[in-house]
Image (cartoon, rainbow, N blue to C red; front, side, top):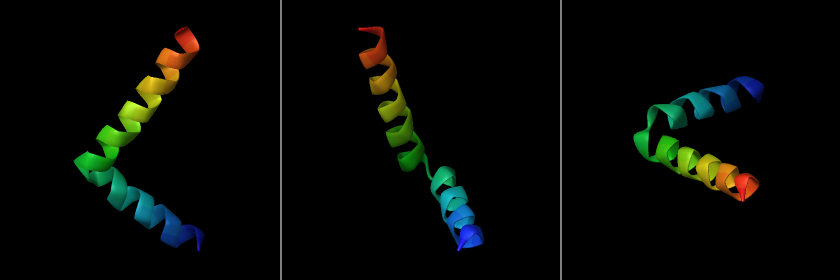
Length: 35
């Protein structure tokens, strides 16, 4: 199960759309903390 999850996460990271969504989520969280 762990290996399968790691593989899925690696494939998702390779995709630009998922990385952009993660970056947006992280940026929103940072903005919320700064406010």
